[in-house]
Image 1 (tube, helix red, strand yellow):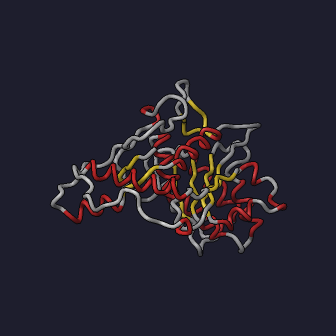
Image 2 (image 1 turned 135 degrees about the vertical axis):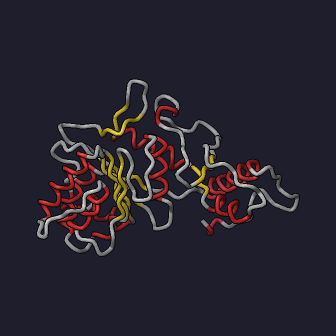
Image 3 (image 1 turned 45 degrees about the vertical axis):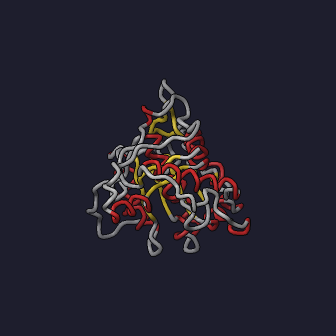
Length: 282
């Protein structure tokens, strides 16, 4: 299962265009991207190749996980509306090493499942994306989320609780239902109890948000602490399990095959379709 798509904001299949049910890939296919630039424009062609996104089994697994926390319409398509259980919603914690593609995976899967594309600021129709700055306080993250809704007229003095209520109000007013918080591990080690309450604030009391948090193993360790006993239930883990060597080679070969076919090229006889590698490389 290989598909290559441009990493720009060009359209990808919306939820209504996906196969009914779970919208998973059932075999090799190329998701639509931006038109291929002229082959004599080396810079543009190189940029397109560098920004291509190769979908993998991670995408299918994450789409399945989205189906566990989001509602569906009568045709089986996912909706930007979280499921509610006794008035509370659930989310997903995506954990893995830095540079493994967690952020791109989440953005691509959400766009594909919901047809909701984020602009350069991280704002979609029903989705927002916010990267947690390393120097940000809890109140600072709330304020960053408010700014994504177009609001920046904050009072001179504001408590964390006031910032929380303001943020929830602004997000609801803007029609936001899915919140993606990236690099959440940047908040850990300062006031972890406040981080616990911060994360739960989007999932409690019927506020109607699905929260997707992204981070390294530090985030996983935090969620699994005994004192945070409610977080594993509310933010079940989605770990990025490394691919086996044969699966990685298959992904590389599929990407090369699709890219060369798109460009109207063929492999030279001197090019090995199966790269020589050691198991230790993975």
